[in-house]
Structures are given as structure tokens and as C-alpha cells.
Image 1 (cartoon, rainbow over the protein chains, first blue to last red):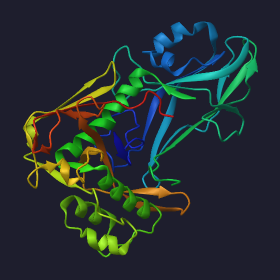
Image 2 (image 1 turned 180 degrees about the vertical axis):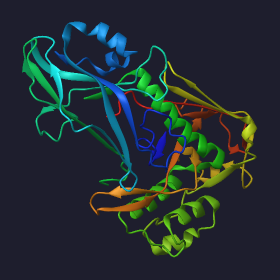
Image 3 (image 1 turned 180 degrees about the horizontal axis):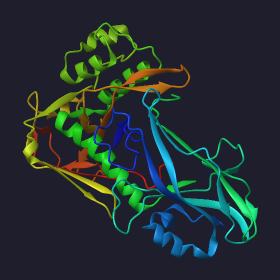
Image 4 (image 1 turned 60 degrees about the vertical axis):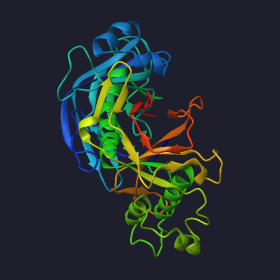
Length: 170
Length: 207
């Protein structure tokens, strides 16, 4: 198989189906997204691929859950000049008390869909976590390490996906 | 690491594959050689670097449409020398007789596999595709190409500007047992394709 410039990836990356692919910008806000932080080594991609829903995520990894923030809003915007999808949360810093002792190493972002399907949740997993103004990370928090009941902060969530031509850099 | 779960993957794969591949099946299928795709890629590479020029077409899109429609003079391109230097093994035959009634798609959410079926015979234009057009060799890779005559602006970081690009998706065609995406019993001349069944899936992780 041989493909040149398979575009549309970022354009469709919104919770509801973008039926006008690939040229129409879809900018929208979706409330009620949840993020969960965990300790320990992040499981491999195949294992994470098998997590069906938020419920099964929390059941499977209850022993390593370090913190959570629920019901926050994500803003989806599109830059068609650069073929970019930008996903951000509100700039407000949100409180996130430690639920256990330990060090945060990875997170699961459970997206709220426009039309949810019973028993299923679209989930993004990553270990791209920084502190304070660490712009190169997907998510930033106040501290990596803490003890049960002490306060941590969920600061930023910013994901910029850019479609690039197969010919970039050639 | 940036991973997603199966439900996320299926949801977005379905949207992507439906929109990308489905539109291209209905707009144009062609049987071409790898050398033809090399020519297509080279024109796009020049356009990406903002250096695409030819007297045979006014834009990249017009050029790409022209090479599929055979309205571009390859001898002129050879003289110009920036896209091709030889027309050896550059072959393109349109598959005709497309009828959307015989086209269907299905998506398996468990495996994220999109299956595309086309059940009506498609005729290879220009009297069919003779293997011996390729200097009596079978070494040149053949492709079934899905082409949609549209272009889109990609951002070129080095140039800090948007540049036009065109697109295709191509499946390898070969004899039975070669491991090609689409396999035929050996034949010296391909006049028509009885039916097509394609299964595609995007990777599990976005990055």
C-alpha cells in the first residue's frame, strides 16, 4: 500500500462526527470531561487499547489512582491554514487532592462525547506530564509527588495535532 | 507515549476511512505503475517546496488531473527535465463502468477494520493493461489507485507558508502468492476487474 497526504486526521478529531470532512473547521466546547492520574509504569499500548470504558479503567487501576479532576470543559478549535487541531481546557487551575501516597507518572483523559455510547468511553493515555509552565507537555500539574490528602493542582491541558505532508523534510 | 483505547481508535478510524477512501472510490479508480506514482510524488514534492513549474499545466492540481486524464504531454515534461527524465514504464489506465449501486462499506468496531466492496466488473480503459508494455518484464509494481481531484493547503514549516498538495491511496496489485494487496491469477493482459474487496485499518496509536 502506498499513500500520499492522507489528510483529515485532525479535522475529524472532535467528539461528534464531522460530516463535512476534510475542509470545514469545527470549533466547539464540550463539558464533563474527566482526567485521572496514576502512579507506576504506564501500561503498554496494547493493554491500554483494551480498556473499554471509564468504569473499567477505574476498576482496573484503582490501586494506583493518585488524583482526579472531573467535569471540566475542553475547547476544540481548528486552524485550517496550518491543518491543526487544538484541544485545550479552561485556563483556570483546578484543585486535585492526592488520593494516595506516591508519584504521578501517567494519566487517562476520558472524553465526553456528543452522543455517548452506553458502556464505552473514548480515552487518551499519556505520560507526557510536566509541572508549572512546562510548555512541551500535554498536561501540567503542580507537583509529581505527594501524600494522601495534600493538595495538588491540575494546571494546563493543551494538545496541538498538526497534519504534515508525507513530503515534509524530504 | 500517546495511546488511545480501542473505542477511541474505532470511532475516529471509521470517520477518517469513510471520508477519505469512500470519496476516492466514487471519484476515480486507476490501474497505474509505480513509476507513474513516482511522477505524481515528484510533482507534489516540487509543489511542497514551492518550486513546481511546468508549461504543461497551470497548477499542481491541473497537472495531477492531467496525468490521470492523459492530457499532459510527457515528452514536454522530459524536455523540461524537472519532473521526469524518461517515460519508460509510466502507465495509467482508468477503470470505467463505476456504478455506486455496487459499492458498499462496513466497519468492524472490534477490530477497527474498514471493509470496502465493489461487486460490478470494472473495465480497464485503452484496451486493457498489457504486462508487456513494461519492456516485457513483470518487475514494475502495479497499483490500484484511488484518486480524488482535489487539493489542500499543507503548512510548510521551512517556508512558513501554506502550499498546495494532492493526494491518493494506492493498493499494490500482483500475481497470486506475491503478497500484493490485490492478487490476480497470472495474466498477460488485464482487461477488467471482476470485483474488489479491500480491508484497511489505521494504527492503534496516534503517535
